[in-house]
Structure formats: C-alpha cells, structure tokens
Amino acid sequence: MFDRILLAVDGSDHAWHAAKTAGDLARRMKSIELWIVTVQDPIPPYLGEPNMQTAINTRLEEGQAILQKALETVRDLQIEVHTDLIEGSPAEGIIDVAKTCHSDLIVMGSRGLGRLAGMVLGSTSQKVVSHAPCPVLIVR
Picture 1 (cartoon, rainbow, N blue to C red):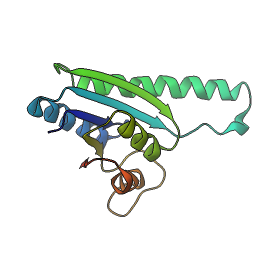
Picture 2: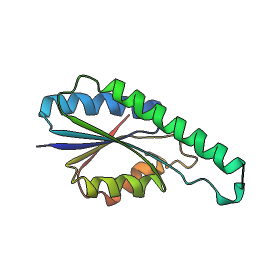
Picture 3: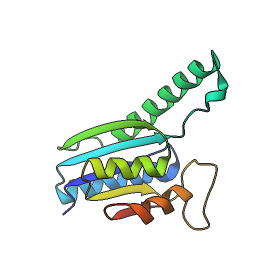
Picture 4: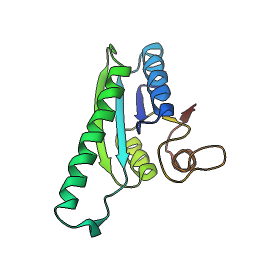
C-alpha cells in the first residue's frame, strides 16, 4: 500500500517521533523505499563573505547530523533508504521531493523548529497537508 514513504525531519522532537513511526510503518507495510529529507530555509544573501561561507558550512553540518540521526532511528530496514538535504521553503521542498520520488505517503512531525507556528499544526505541516500529492501522516 505504501511502497514509497517520504520522511521529512528537521531535528525537532516531533520529527524523531515521526522517524520512529515511519520506520515502523515501512517494516509493517513491507515498503520498498524510504526517502529521508530535511529542508532548510535559504541563507540570506546579504550576509556576505566570510559570513556566508560560515553559514553554509554550519547548515551543511546541521543538516547532515539531522539526516544521520534519522537514519539511526530507522535502522535495520531491509529496504532502499535515500537521504536528501535541500535548501528552500520547507513545505515546497517536501512536496517537490514527494512528487519527484512518487511517494505514496509523507510522514512528518506536527510541529517543527520553524519560527512561525499554526494554532494546531505547524505552518509547514499545514502547507504540506494542503498541497501534497499523496496522503500525509502527521505525528505528535
């Protein structure tokens, strides 16, 4: 049913609950592929050098650490697991990856680390639910 699952993580507590849920779901559903993606807001171009390069390096290290922790959370899956670190609007990035990978399900936390938050769900979660090309499982 859910052959291709997309897990969106951002380093928040809700994201780690989502990672555990996605791993469990992939095992039970005998999924064939899991994509783990983290999408970071763009770095403002006005930083200039050397601040821009420092910010890029820091973001890259943070993103890789988030992806590594997600991989550890879903370990021992007997399926193909891919990771992707993207810069851009988190909601748009998640939706784009879901379309590109032909995801059957998106799994993500209800609230992330973003500055803006909705009343019930985080603003990224709301946007993904509204525009996703497939079902979305929101985990608390």
